[in-house]
Length: 140
Image (cartoon, rainbow, N blue to C red):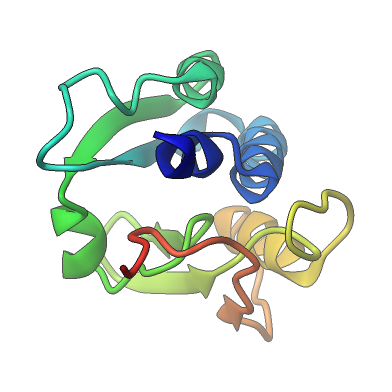
């Protein structure tokens, strides 16, 4: 459908993936990322396997998974695409927020800087930043 085609090609998701790739490159080997793609319950299993999925699979350190009915996103309170959660090795939440400067925009931004600092073990004043994405699940 036209609505699902729009969902699959959103520039906000592309920008978030590019920022994530930069963060992982700066972080070195000590960081792994799980990237979830929304999978509607009533669509074929490969519905979420788009070019964005392919892009994510080629980022070193990324595990890509389908999120059936947004169950995992809901469990973690992620309602917007590009919502990044950073946990330490003990499972403590260090950061929750966005890593782009604006909707669909890449470049220097406070979320990216905060995540890199935290991964490198440096103290950072921010543990949350605005998320400039699209809703994970569109309301009717």
